[in-house]
Image (cartoon, rainbow, N blue to C red):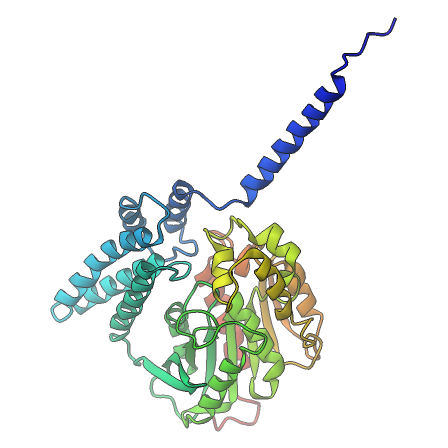
Length: 414
């Protein structure tokens, strides 16, 4: 005899299904949500201890000290916590600069990195903006110790100015090759200036600028914002020290997007372009925004708010989803056109820029490209302890740029 069915069985089944779906949605929402403040603190200290972005070069003890006074997600409280620790190093550096310049320089570097993290990822409040201004002040104090010196370049542009940092190799004979360096979403020209000191011994100079929408850039991101970088190229034509036939561009992440676009639209004026994890097409689609960028855990926190801030008048996720596709190099009809030679670096495990974009870029254009793809790498190809950012820079990027900017055979006059 069959067991009689409870009249409420269907209700129980639906309840069970609902609970399963609810649990599933909870897991998804937990996956997509930003880190809590406590989670940010734990992860940031871990990254500082392991030399991981965006805490490369920061002392874990300094980070712990700053966090001790941060008890909420208030942006000004965050900035104040890091400024308080940085101020101590900044004040000490100023007081001992003449007596102990080596220690003072080390203090300025420490202050700069702390101030910079105080405004991270973007200076989205009064306090974070103040921390950013102090970061620039500390960085330029550090740069006073350099030989060859740092030149602050100011290029008129559409009623405003492009501010860049230029360093030329010491005792260079004749016009020298040069790299234009462009930062990513949350790094700044100061970070690239520090890194690119490594290229000076190869008799190559550099000019670091903030990419559109970031740092001190005079314009926000748009389909035509590369015109600011074309203006930088125009400026370099006026510098007698620079070999106009040997200019390359380097970019990281969003900066890599601009480097890739410049390799197409300015190919006649560029010897080459190196690009770390350049967004190309899939990155700009709504699915990737919603499923990979929102609450991204490879990024420490607030990736999408930082992304929205580099555009004009983008205040909501829906506006971001409508705006991003216009930036696709496929949508703009550029991918597949003739381009300058490129070095393209990426990590297969990157959750911030899809590896599909890299493979698409590698397959387009008219000249062979050099690829450095790390199967175990994340964003920019970085891999903790194995391929940290400085190792990729010195072992992959610098050698390629040196090779690419070498004199043409039979043209050793330069």
